Amino acid sequence: MPARIVTPTPEAIAEAAERLQNGGLVALPTETVYGLGANALDTQAVAQIFAAKGRPSTNPLIVHVADVEAARALVSEWPPLAEKLAQAFWPGPLTLVLPKADTVPSIVTAGGQTVGVRVPAHPVALELLHAAGVPIAAPSANRSEEVSPTTAQHVADSLGEFVDDLLILDGGPCSVGLESTVLDVTTGDVPRILRPGMVTAQMLHEVVGEVLEGSASNRDVGPERSPGQMVRHYAPHFPVILVTSTEFRTMPLGGCGVLNYSAIFPRYQQCKLHQIHYNPGGYRTYFQMPEKPEKYAARLYRGLRELDQLKTITRIVIELPPDAPEWAAVHDRLRRAAAPKEGA
Ligand code: TXA
Ligand code: MG
Image (spheres, protein in one colour):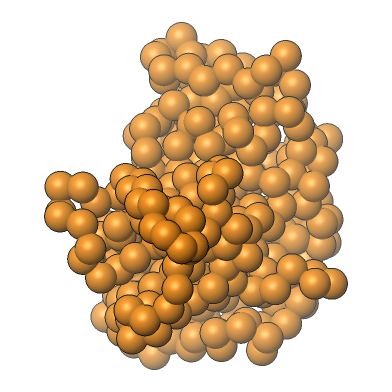
């Protein structure tokens, strides 16, 4: 059966909650990206997530909960640092990595002793968590390595053929658009960013003081710290080339799909595909990106997915946005999208 996208009415939420309670999968909106959810305490249910995504079993899942109390039930320690961060950023796009409680099945944590937990800020996710009454393990609702979904339709496009009769709660386009910041708080007094997100190092610093950051390539994080941080991730199927604004102005763009940062099109035409025919060189297709990092982040995956579906291009060129701290998460995802394919 194909995927079913539904409006999150009380009846639809109840159906989704029942599916979760019965060991099934449900795709749910969060403020970051759509997730593919299962009851985190049910090993067999969680195993279906790995199968549907083609995800390596070495990559742990984030567990979503309704509130701090539910988060505390999943961990064996809740240090003052975690309390401070939860008070400041939950509900919201911050995942805290903490020592796991015995009740968390090892499939969720990929055999590790820590668990990632967060309270999502999307009202539909929170309603579902309350209705189901179980913690929800949910990775992004895409096949492994693909660009994460920021609309219900993206989920259907990615997973429709891999999950029979998938129920997708439609919560509209995700407002944040990039995956949560993953923060290791098992490191003592100084937490460490394992995956940058729109809760930035600066925002964390203002709440807890010193914060460590992983390197751009995440090489220093290493497989044992955050196994999911493969360099190539969040990637379209066309090759992606990152260029500076100076390079962008002079390079030939025939046959390219372009995410441009420079204002080529008027503001009211932002975030739509603009196809222009040039001779020689064929079509160029532009997706004009917004100027501010929050808006850019919210549109990035949609832009990549729309370009990736075109028949008229052979590669994707991305004009890099400014190199400033508030753009760290965007730059991280752009680098991963452009990383060479394994074996290529
Ligand atoms: O915004 C998000 O985080 C979305 C939504 C659905 O909440 N979820 C998401 O999940 O992006 P996923 O599975 O696509 O990415 C989870 C990341 C992976 O890089 C994984 O390795 C890391 O979090 N992670 C999860 N648990 C961890 C743990 N115990 N220790 C270290 N890293 C962990
Ligand atoms: Mg993912």
